Length: 81
Image 1 (cartoon, one colour):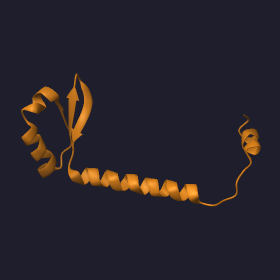
Image 2 (cartoon, rainbow, N blue to C red; image 1 turned 120 degrees about the vertical axis):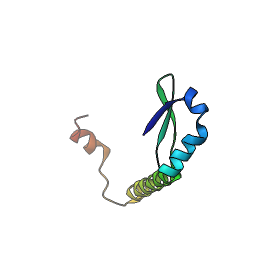
Image 3 (cartoon, rainbow, N blue to C red; image 1 turned 90 degrees about the vertical axis):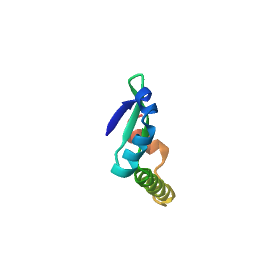
Image 4 (cartoon, rainbow, N blue to C red; image 1 turned 45 degrees about the vertical axis):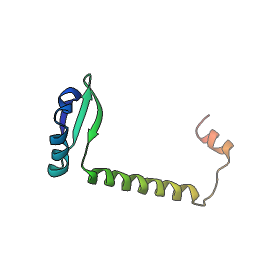
């Protein structure tokens, strides 16, 4: 992973773009010493989107799953609330 300050990145945007695209590098751009944004290969973004969708699908499935409900008073008692 490459880390570069925004001041230096301004003049190198084209080459940073090429590094991310051609070499599949991740470039983090900092401002005032703090990570602010990243230039990443589109494949990384697509993978993150698929993972997010999979997690949302799993969460929805779990939420919609019909199971035995537990009365709130029993939950509080078990958790000593």
